[in-house]
Length: 371
Image 1 (spheres, one colour):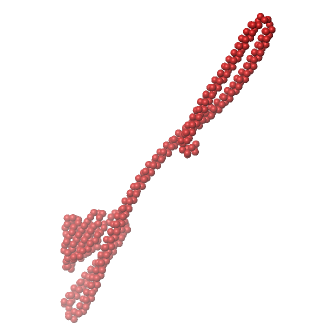
Image 2 (tube, one colour; image 1 turned 45 degrees about the vertical axis):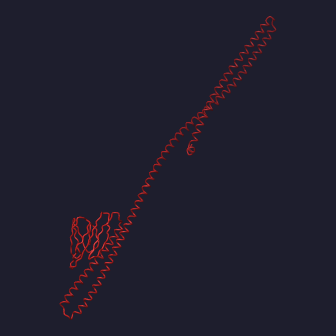
């Protein structure tokens, strides 16, 4: 296993870090220690295993921040293997983690198979070494049998080597699939981030629209309150107009009653004037009779009687005319006063009716229907 800054991947060595000191350990037990001043370094060193074989082993360690990937490249005996590991991010979903764990389990199984194959190969090498020793110290009679068994062992070794190569190819294909899946997961996460941004913008637009609608609703509520106040004032004015109209109708009825009484009074005055005229005519006739009686008297008093008759007639006529004129003038003044009062009341009632009609026309249809 390789462990670099908390990132693990399947390979045949182990890396441990203490401060700036890195130790790489092969699965066979050989160790190489190197010192670096940074968390990212490229090191070339000579690796020696238990069998005594050696080779140049190159290690490239690149450590980024907690949100980015960590890249490791290593090779042995001139061959290179590269892979990219993606660290766990807080926004990854459980499904991706489960897939990753399943892939890691498969990788561990392949690693165990590979280690078992290496152990078998090591055993075969030991068997070959033992056979070589037996060949060196054995009799010539057993040489052919030894060569035959050696050929079988060689065939087994070739078969195991081919199986190892197949397993290595499978491991490489799994690594490629893992890289492809990690790239697809990156693209999926980026798409989800873009969708989240779009949804956030949509939510902001909805918030602004809701604020505008709330302002509009508040304005409508203020307008409704204002309309209610206007309606209340109109109702108060209408009630006052109704009261004024009732007063006007009562006044008109009273005026009509008064006019009827005045008509009766005028008719009574006319009847009284006619009666007085009859009385005056009777007095005039009685005076004429007295004058005629006086004419039958001495001639001496004839001129005086004529003068007295004329003066009395003129006085009676003047008195009758003045009384009639006074009564008629009083009746005319009373009629004129009543006509002026009725005209004033009628004009006031008409003006109030006009104002009420204007206010009624200015009201809304709903208010008109309520009224």
